[in-house]
Amino acid sequence: MENYSKARTVEQPCVCPFPGLAADTPEIHVKDGSKIRNLLRYALSRMEAKTRAADEEVRPQPEEGGVEAPQEAPGRPLCRHVVFTASGKGVSKAITCAEIVKRRVKGLHQLTKLLYGTVEEVWEPLEPAAGLDSLTVSRNLPVIWILLSREPLDSNQPGYQAPGRYDALWTQAANREEGGGFSGQRPGHRRKRGGGGGGRGKGSGRQSGRSREAAKGQS
Image (cartoon, rainbow, N blue to C red; front, side, top):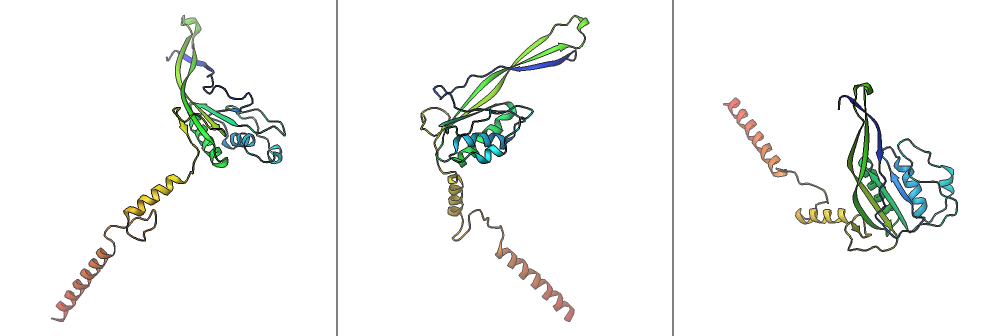
């Protein structure tokens, strides 16, 4: 490929894997260069029951690397669902946005789908007179789709996550540490090896050494 240069990259659109959603359901496309605060501002404005005055004062500006969603009209009704989708390096940002929205809006059901999209790369020869043809390379790219819903979803579907307390994991970890430690030990506190007993032993050894030296000096 040393005789070629990449001319363009075309990402084939991926069909939403969640059928039956309302026509006004926001579908937020997360790119690698997207700003998380802009993504969250739009998603929360469609899901949270609060006034939109603060959101109208500061509008997210279009960004290089992809804009996530169109501006909403004042007084627009709240949505029952919101969809985050991303591919490649934007997957981690989409997951982060979904987790933050779940913390802000309680009781959301989540359904996650992992698919593969197609990306076509067009390579042109560096010297057209050399008789080389253009090349088109197709490769698969992982795509994540995350549906957050106020309404209950089918719990038998793979990728379903029920709403719940987000501190349950930390509570379980603290209980395990308390069960394995001694009475009165704080969660997350580790007992030092060779603690008080070892220190006292070393101290007594040093004391006996000094007493022997003093005894030799007196003799």
